[in-house]
Amino acid sequence: MLQPENFKKLTDELVKRKSLSDVVGYAKLFPGNDYCKHLIEQFTLESRSKMRVEISEPANRLPEKWTEIYNRLFEVINDRNNSATYFSGTRFINLIKEFSPYFPDYQRFIDARNAKGKSISRKIFYYDILVELADEIRKNVIERMFQILDPFEKSKILQIKNLLNPGIINSDSDKVEDATTFSSEPPVVFYFILLG
Image (tube, rainbow, N blue to C red; front, top):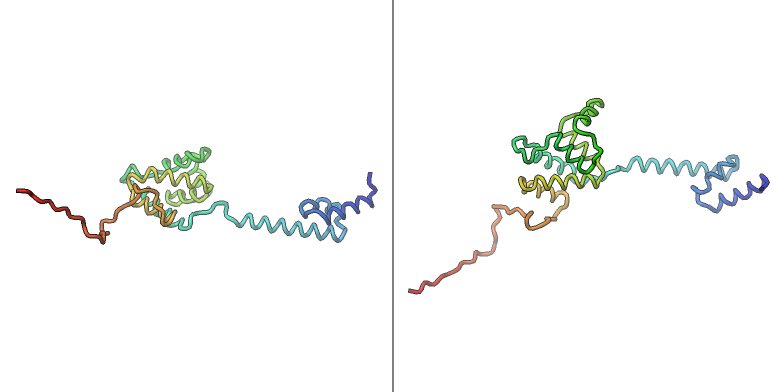
C-alpha cells in the first residue's frame, strides 16, 4: 500500500501526463494543490463551454428555403375541395405515424397542445411537427407526401422538389413543359410527291 506522500506524488505525475478528462478525478483528490486546483477549474470551464455549444446547436437542420417549401406544400394539402390532396389533421398525423409509430394520435396531440396553450391551427401545428421531427424522418414524410400528391399536382410538387434540390429534376416523367416556351429550331416539314 502506498503511503499518503507517495500517493500524492504519483497523482501529481498522472495529472501532468494524462488528458484533462482522464485526470480530473485524481486532481479532485488534492484540491488544495495549486496545479490540481488549476486543472479542476480548466475542466469545469471546458465542460460548461461544451454544454453551451450543444444547447445552441439545433438538433435538426432544415432545408435552406424551409419556410417557402413548407408554405408551398401546405398550399397543396389545404385544398378542401380536393379529397385526393387535402390533408386533415388525422390524415397528416397518420402519415407521421408511418415513420414515427409512437407519435401520439390526433386527439391526444390536440389535447396536449391545448393544455400547453399552443395553436391548433393546422398550418401552425403541421409546421411545428415537421420542424421537431428528426431530419431523416422529416425527409421520409415529405417524400411520402410527394408520392401521394404528385399524380394530382405534378407542377406544384416539381417546384417544391426544385427548392429542396435546386437544379435537379429526378426523371423525364417529372419534367413539366411550359406552353409559353417555343423551340428556336424550325419545324421539320415532310413533303410528299404525289405520282399521277
